[in-house]
Length: 420
Image 1 (spheres, one colour):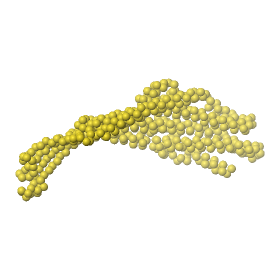
Image 2: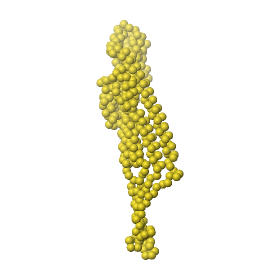
Image 3: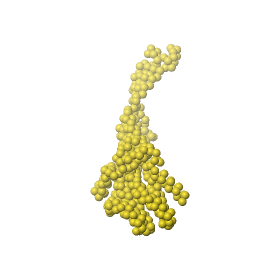
Image 4: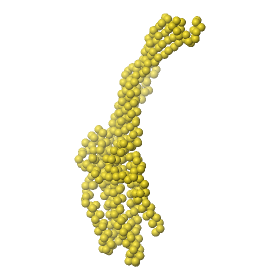
């Protein structure tokens, strides 16, 4: 009995909000999403990749700098002078060179950088889709866990009152110790299950705090105003079309194929040698005293024609096509699976009488009163409490499953189409 009292003390502490020593905030889904967009560090970090990729586009647009070379005599033995670069007796050269890229290399590099910037944006929005789904999924789960935890309060309060009454009756010898212990055992069982739900809620709460980047606030989700559209309002084909248009991971696969194609074009252009054009003025070291010269230089592509990189880029195109095909099939499969799950959840919830929960809660009080008046047995009373608990949890789970199924479908199509 002493161990049971210790267990109840622990349970009481776990269910006491003051233990968290954190501010409590009731928050709607819209408020949570707004804070998530403003504070989430993973999103903010990924957003910098867009700026980095856009800066690379600027870099690709830049032209090569010209080069300037200066040369001069270190020592003139005829005049016995060091660093003789004067016009009368010295010698010096001045040369300017400019690298000119051929075969459209610059434009191809610009297009490649632009595609990489677009891919960075797609990766950002794909992360936003994934983390946003996690946020909403945790929000719904926390809401229904909270509902289940609070639903236990009614049973626990009634059983606590009944337990106190039975303790007094046991002391007077009116009821047997077996009946008193049975009531107490039922009470402990309910409290233990409530603690299990509370621990699950605490885990989800920790994930919400991390997503919302605030470890000092205890968030209480409020989903009362959420309006979920019936799945039957949409056809499977319309949802597939929406997914093919909005899924960022699919767009990323398409951009990867475009990137591979552009990379192949760039590698082929690199097989064409670039040309260097230069002009030089030479004082006294050439065939005349003041020589003005024009230089043109380029590599002769006898051995190195970028063959390996061209072959690798060609294989990259083939690989990207396969990955795009795989991603397209994945998107279609995810939409079909999520749609079927949402339809099943919708049908299940519609089959439940909306007044069932209220009637069951009213019956709970009636059963308790009849038990106190000895109109029903202890076995019937405990059986009803167990049935009430199981049905209450199952009803919450049905409602929760529908919310999660619709959110999974939203995630699969890449757009929050079914909830407002």
